[in-house]
Figure (spheres, one colour):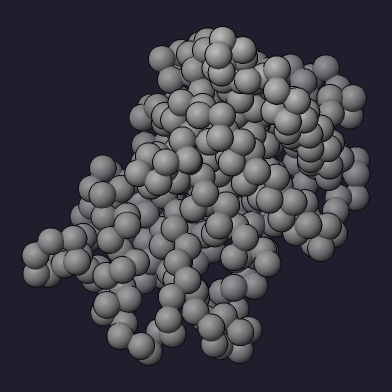
Length: 341
């Protein structure tokens, strides 16, 4: 809903969108789906946005700010899969390490993450209580990200189980390929040294919710930008795919779903801009939680639509979604749901 924005703010978003399309044309493509994560995106983005704090949001920053949201919305609309990965990297991993990491962990990971030299990966796992077979549970947690760590990514894994004063016990680990230790054979043998454990504390769950709120400009900008890019790809797929030479866009139910999605996107963008624009009092914690929850639910529907329209890279086929853009996106949305609800 651009009516709330001034020319400078619209220009900032569109400048980053055009930059991403031009700089990473092989990934974005004029008719592409924006699936794929350019390996040098973070480093180039850090240089492009130097001084804005885009990849280095402070853990105690609770003042609404529109700049990072607009910049990331622009990049994410050109590169939807990258948008979801940026939400992991800048909206979750960096603030979490900044808040819960020990001094040596912050010194080791924050510089390469904020400078774009390393990618942050995020995983939230609902597990059995900590006292129940901790070794087996830790293996289960590490295994999904062992391949990510082997590619040079920093993995932040949070495990949540029932119990504790707040009703949830959290444990968190941060590691990369230097920490993976193989015990036994096969994937089940990956373990971590205790030095990877982070100092979450007894109020970890509430603090994590507060972190997501404080990172809302980053998270919302990434998610709504990615949704805009995905909807463009949905329209393209609906125009080019057909049944008996009739484009599926001609089907009324497809038209209705695409129209409803577009209206929903504009409504959420309007709420985001209104919440983050300078001069506003900003939303309450409850209102911000509700906006984040509604955004997560909306984007889940956009992912379903992209899968049903067979947008390249966003298939509903389980084998394709497990490790592709759709799988990572759904894992991110699921983790946000666990944190916010």
